[in-house]
Image: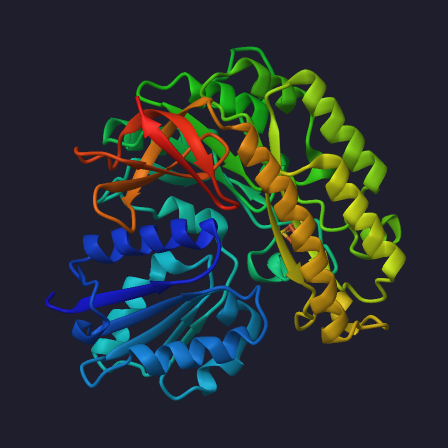
Length: 440
Ligand code: SF4
């Protein structure tokens, strides 16, 4: 096959994982990946539906990337899943496919190329079938994602994930272990286990003792097994839900050296009233108690979080509660956003939508508080030694950028190429978002 494809990826780590598997599948089928969109016969945009006006952004992305050479335009991921057949009203789009059916993309592209059909929509939920069709990885990087779980049953009232990724599905343990082993044998050093809610992972044990009932492994057991695999230098996982985070997982952090002492536990709000309206399933006190308990079990642990400001009916007093919560936890890294309604979610229909200027003001205040804590933490690193996995070159000559155990960007100078290697770094100075150091 002589056709070349270009893939443009947006959104979360799940999308990055999916897009890499799409590349593997199309390459296996004989298509060639190009990093130049104007050279592509097939244009694939893999989309995220989290931000406002996601569909419009996809359409303008297609306009920017499509050329006279483009024969097929395929849109994948969460936007087609949310927009359904409406997405095909756009005249440029030939194929719209959801996140659970990308194993069928080769067939759909061939159908369009051969003139058999002009428009295809497939937004079925087929997680199990999709994972069963994954092909061997063609390229392995030093840091690789492995999906362990997909979908979500939590139905937070602002979130589209249960509607776009579907209900919770955990991959078979043996498939996860085999995929991870293969990545490690082919050069991966860091593995990041990913899922919408990894704490709900539950999958049948790969080893069955005769006469014993089949056991179910949770993430705690899976991490311990993966930590033993040859070649693994660093292990992470994301994303967690506070209500499902167990003491056992905290203990696993305390006893497994390759598991980073850092975890993302999204709080979203510090107000019990707003947390209830969000359907988060816990109070601010329960969240804080969980983090305090985590620190007592594993004193090295650091946290990151997500926050939403301006959720419907949020008062100044609710917002103050969020500020108080952040001041108590002192996050290492935080991600904060203005609430924006998502089509067909319960929160979009709630009364008391907050004006944009109020959301802007609250976001600015919250980010200033979060940044202050982040900078204080960064300053506490000065003079300390950290292991860094380098993954890109920096802005200036001889500069390399990598990640420490807290997922912070660490910048050093080196005469030799550091990409894909670990190095011990003494932290010399810090900014709000970066750490500068010297290689030992
Ligand atoms: S737990 Fe996360 S993915 Fe699931 S509904 Fe809530 S915000 Fe969305």
